Length: 301
Image 1 (cartoon, helix red, strand yellow):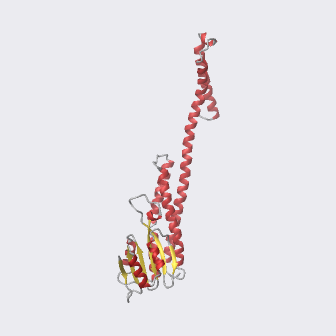
Image 2 (cartoon, helix red, strand yellow; image 1 turned 90 degrees about the horizontal axis):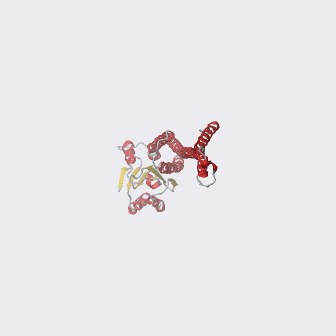
Image 3 (tube, one colour; image 1 turned 45 degrees about the vertical axis):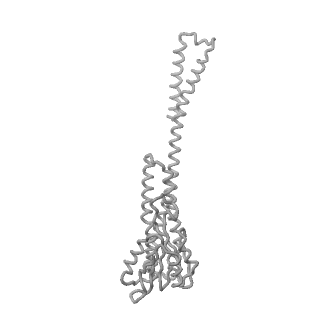
C-alpha cells in the first residue's frame, strides 16, 4: 500500500511517500519514478537486512531497525526482536518502506508535516532515526529492572526457576539490540556528515550514547550475575559436601569397630567377657567426642 504523507508544493519542499507491505511491482514503479537503482530496491525485500547507509548518484539510502518483538514466541533473534524500515531520501523526496506497521512514522507526519512542513529532509530523517532508536529505550530499561530483580533474589537466596534459560534469552535480546545500535552509529555519522547545523542532531546523538550505555550495562550485569550464580551454587555444593564429609568422619571409625566385632571369629577374647559390650560402647562414645572436639579445634564446625 502506497500512501502519500507529503506532496511537494508551496507548503512543502519535498515529497514523502510511505509504502507498507510493498509488492515488487510497487517498488520498481517507485524506482522508475524517482530514479532509484533496482539493486538497492531489492534490499527492501530482505526482512533480515542489518542497518546500513548507501550513497547513490542522486539520493541516499538507509536501513534502520525498530524494536518490535513478536509476541507469539520468545524472541531472541534480529528478525524476532526488530523490524526493518528502509528509507530513500534526497532534497526532493523521502520514501519510507516497511512490512510491519510503524506508528512512529504517522506520529512524525502528524507532528511536523500535517499541514505544512518547515523541516528539511535531513531534519526529517533525523526524526525517523530518533524514533527508531527511541523504540529500544523502554525495553532496555525493562531488561535492566529484570536484572536488578534477579540479582536481589539471588543474593537473598530465593529460588528462581529456569534462571539460566531466562538469562540466556535476556543476553540474546541485549546482544541483538546492542548490535543494531552499533550498526546505526555509521548511519548517524554519514547522514549528518555534511549537515552539522541540524538542531535535532545532538538529541539523536545523546539518545544513541544513552542506549549504548544501557545495553552495555545489561550485558555486564548478565556476565556478573552468571558468575555470582555459579559461585553461590558451588558454595551450596561445598556446604553439602562438608556436612557429608563430617558425618562420614564420625561414622567411619565406628563402622570399622562394629565391622571388626561383627566378624564372629571363635577366639575373640572380648566376646566372652562380661565387660566387652559396654567397653566397646564406651570406647565408641569417647572416640566420637574426641572427633567432635578435634573438629572444633580445627574450626571445621
